[in-house]
Image (cartoon, rainbow, N blue to C red; front, side, top):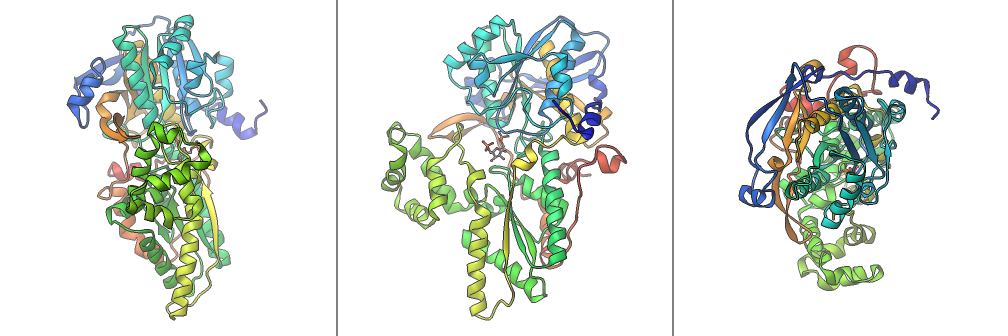
Length: 545
Ligand code: FBP
């Protein structure tokens, strides 16, 4: 593979490790744990993996150094740092015993079921150190949930003499990792399953998981480009930029970018829901900011829009909930795709039908037809930025007719998502991911299953980070999914009483009226630590830094 000079130099970077993961590792176990909610139900569903203690790794004197074969799977959307998790796993198991082997299952969980794999040798691993992307083994969204899949996977696990599988994924994939761990434990197959917290969306976090990997790099990448756009906007002073940002349901990415670049407007979906705002309310707010800036002579600005916004407008949320239940029925699934919209229309309640009919046809069909394998609405495909700017444009026309707006409104549209998911990891993600990989290898060496690898205290210098494991059941609750109550890891949405949102809310009026843009510039790998090793503003604020 041909490499740029930067890639070559970056390949030689040795990620920093917490002291507890350097050399021999000792396991410190905490008290038994409980799930965050619905304890009785989760316990009954996971009798073999419920209640296990939290684990912390400390510097030890000796460690179990038997050779082990392990398998790794990348699941779901790409996130910067995934390759470093695999490099950490590789170095971790080779450190235990050079005869250990690492196998990579290809193109996501489907690789385990279909027996598609490669052995990850030092030559392969060294090509991918500190690189972005998931192309080392590929990723996929096959949902691992059926017993036939687990049994099919077991065949290749036995053939390769694999002792443990690591699933690197988001909340849904880690929920499935726990179901698989429980199944193999119940059957006494002696196969361990460990998860690893990945997703640029930043919604896999809680008291145990400080952040999901990839969030840091993706936000810094988007913030760089938004900063460039803002500088352009402030130079030409003639465009309003409507920028949709990836992040699925949660607005963490939009909020983090707002904290980094100080735009004129950032919509936070969780606030829209909390305040019961309609699409028209959002449009009124944005049009108000445009009009006020125009009155000050500023016919330019930036509006950040989280991609999941539409799901949080209460009327649309109610519609989606009904659609989810409706589309999950065998009867609906038997309907041909070209007849689905008519089927939906003839089965929706009157209130939701009215909402459905009020949406532009393209948006309505996205909500009704296209789901990912986990049943999620594919919000990345809905052009909310265009929908919103069109509505704002119409509102401004009406305001102009009433003499309430004098200005020129020229909107431009952007969607930043795929641009940031495979960026070369920042130092934070490179170090964090490598430590997660080594931590996962130590969980496996210590016979653990049903755990997720974690690393905490990450706003301190890397040597002081604390690595360990959290039982996945500890993060679960029961939620309605596709018409049924299911055990799932609780998704972390933006907390309106949390420090990141509060900081944004305190400043947004000023940012709306004045031009307070910040231009963060590109991620730096070498140079002063305050430039190269800073965390996201979200994490720093959450940790009171
Ligand atoms: P994960 O939840 O699997 O990490 O994926 C995150 C994400 O990038 C979302 O932000 C986005 O909505 C979705 O993936 C897009 O999915 P796809 O890659 O299938 O287009």
